[in-house]
Length: 539
Image: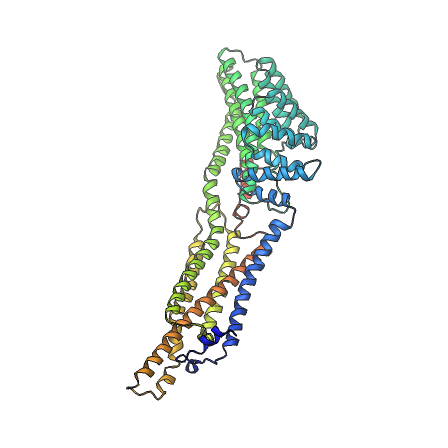
């Protein structure tokens, strides 16, 4: 023990607080205090180390940054992937194709084509990469190169009708006119008859990350939009040609053309992905074709077949279902995200409130000279029960919220009633613990009032009365400061246990919201099935 510490312990007017239960074992109290702090620091270190090791040390740096970029917005992921590609190229003779392809997906417009070209040269057998490269060439109006990429994608496994449909679209754009349009429709008709499934490219992802989150679904939807855009332009060309020919009364072959386009839309809507977007786009193309077929029937016969009318009616009903889902999709995802943000918000707000309270009490205790000589004052059983039971209740609430997050159905409501109940219960528990910290020192001192009154102190002994009053003030703020300090440490234990348990049970950390928030993929599948039943009943 240093000389300064000895001097502080030997303050003559502040003894060992025997009336308050102080044993005078300041060295033992100091060891317990340091042991508690060590446990708090160890829990923080363990949780942090678990996250850091898994995030940054489990894989090499390039792979770790690649995984991180998958969950970042495009603008944030782009510089990260540039560094990944650069570092990977320096380490390997042949760069990893997926890194370059991931950068191509997020690259700036003037650098997209060179990056895709580089990725395609690294892995020319990847048909889905060829499809995406071809789409970018299509958007840049390099239709001849786009046709070649789509053609190469079509001969690579797996069997897929999408590259041939895209090839037909590029052919029509590259050779405007009736001959080019006829050749493209012949390719579409041949693809329709082949019966190959319509498969969209999957987002670049990792097997270590779940696919049910909003980030993965948004990437998948972006690919669907990208791949369907050329088909819409192609449908506009075919329909535009049909409109002009109908005006000229030259409709002898138009119905067969439009029937081919309608079948394309049917097969697009029936793709294996079972997503709402591709079905919506497929129905749109079907409606475009059917409306012109109806116009042809009216021009030639004066009437429209009942089958076409019925089909159009059912297509519009299915389209309305899909558009209603799309209109509410963002609001439902936002509501679902709130369910996962709730425990995070409660935790950090509680930590801020507790830290602010502790700092205030620390200043008051310092002003009252409640220093190390008060460490040996023991806490009562009631304080230990309140702190233990309160933190167990908080841990239980966190567990309940984790379960309700998974059970919450964003399709049934845009706001969950249980969130307000959980929020109220949380703050009731926290408030009870905080208020008890204000009342507890006074209750603790009531137990020793009798002992203080029994001391033989005369009314004329002002010095003795002042000393006793000072003892009470020091003891009061000492108990309060230590109570809130222990409450903060136990909150750290609670949060560390929740984070580790959450990771073990869900394979994710509670702050990975882009992966936890549902992307409504299951809801899309259910909606598509309902739309199919509606359309099938009209056949």
